[in-house]
Length: 200
Image (tube, rainbow, N blue to C red; front, side):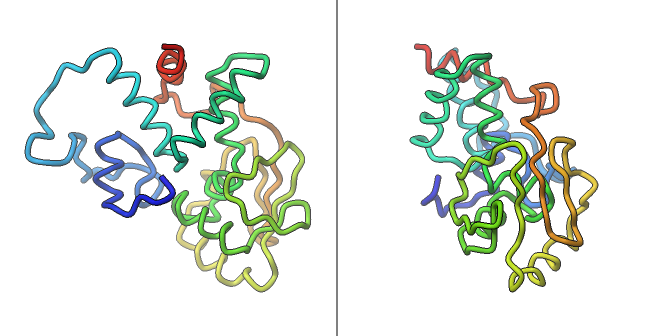
């Protein structure tokens, strides 16, 4: 995923990924796959259904195949429901938290903000988008980057920030209060299909 340079909108549309250019599918976005035969209905095999769901989640969070497999192994190792833990790990990524808080229009932009060294976690610079944030961690923006972030945030509805993070838009500060529960995450994601995919 890190090196993909093709048409993102077509890729996301084919995988039924949301959050394309402004956090949700627009009404003008067609729901069929791209291409001449995109609207043709095909009966998918069980494997194809499992694979498609895995790819949808992977492209939603912008992680590579190798990264996603590592998240699954870590989720399977921990006690609890593997699918829920997998989603919680993905939600705890630094780039995702910036996106959820409204510090980036898209996850890709939030990832770039982290890569360029604008972000501090508990006062220390972190430029790794996949950095896993822990409950209680405080994310801030470097002083010399604040004007740029305020311009970005002016185009975003900050009221959509989830309940598990606290956002101080004036101070450009995010507090990761807690790990989200499954019922607070996207209900359209079917993580059980991913578990079945890796179980084969």
